[in-house]
Length: 195
Length: 198
Picture 1 (cartoon, rainbow over the protein chains, first blue to last red):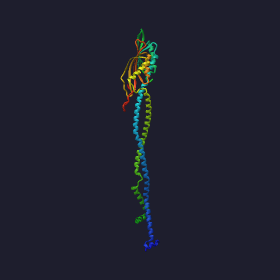
Picture 2: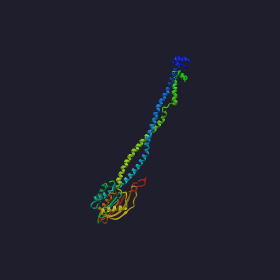
Picture 3: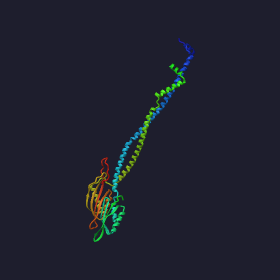
Picture 4: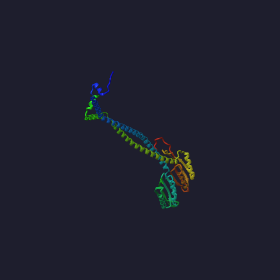
C-alpha cells in the first residue's frame, strides 16, 4: 500500500529536495518569461501596426481601382461621342447647304417685277422704252426721249432707287424720229437681289 | 527549456533592451509589412485616376457639344422642312407645262414658242429651265413675270427681254427664261453636296 503525505515540507523531505531552492527556480523562470515578453514587445507592436496599416492601403487600392474602372467606362463613350459629333456636324453642313440653296431661290424673287413697276412710274411723258433686258442681275434699258434732260432725270430716278446699283448711261445719241430730234439712250445697271 | 529561461532571466535590463531592439530590428527587416510595398501601386493608380479625370472633363465637354449640336441640327432641320415645301420632291415635264399654261392664261399673253432646255442636275436641286417667247401688252407681260415670281412652288425668272414692236402698236415682244426646281434625288451616303446648280 502506498502512502502519500500532501504536506509540502514532508513531500520535499521525502524526495530529498530543498523547498527554498525550488521557489527560487520558479521565480527565475518567471523572470525569464518576463524578459522574453519584454523582448517580444517591439516585434509584436510592429506586427500590430502593420496588420492595421496594410488593410487600409489595400482598401485604398480597391477604391482607386473601382473609381478608375467607373471613369474608364464613362470615358469609353468619348470615342463614340466624337464620332457622333462629326456626323452631326456633317449633317448640319449638309442641311445648311440645302437651306442656303433654297433660300437663294426665294431671295429677291420680286425684284424684277418691282423694277418693271418702277420703270412705269418714273418714265417721262415724252419718253418711251424700246428694250428692257434682265439677264440674271444685269439690266439693260434702251429707249428714246425728247430731250437730254429727260434722260438725265430718268437716270437720276434709277440711281436713287434701292432696287438697282451701278446705274450708268452706256450711250446717248441724237436720232431723228418722225421728223423730230430725239435722244436715243442705253442705260445699264445691276439688280439688287437682296432688296 | 528551463535552462534557456534561466539564462534569459539572468540578463540585465540593458541586455534585454538590446535583445528587444535586435528582435524588433529583425522583425522589421524580414517580416514587417504595413503595406508600404503597396505605395508605388497606389501612386500609379492615383496617376491613372487623374488621367481618367482629365478624360472625364473632355468627355463631359464632348457631351455638352453633342447636345448643343443636336439642338442646332434640330432647328436647322425644322427650318429646312419649312423651306423645302417651296420646292417639289417630284416633277415632270407635263406638270411644268401645265403650270406655265396657267401663268400664261392668267396674264393673257400670247405664246409664240416654248422650249424646255436640258435639266441641270444638282446635288441639292434639279433645275428645269424653259425658254419662251410671247407677245402682249406691258401690263400683261409684267403680270406674267409677277405670277412666275410668286408661284407657291419656287419658279425663278432667270432672264427676260421686252422689245417694243416697230412701229409700236401697243404690243411687246417678250422673251423669258424661267426655271422650275425640284429637290434632287438623295445620293448615296458619303456624297458631298456641292450646292445649288449653276
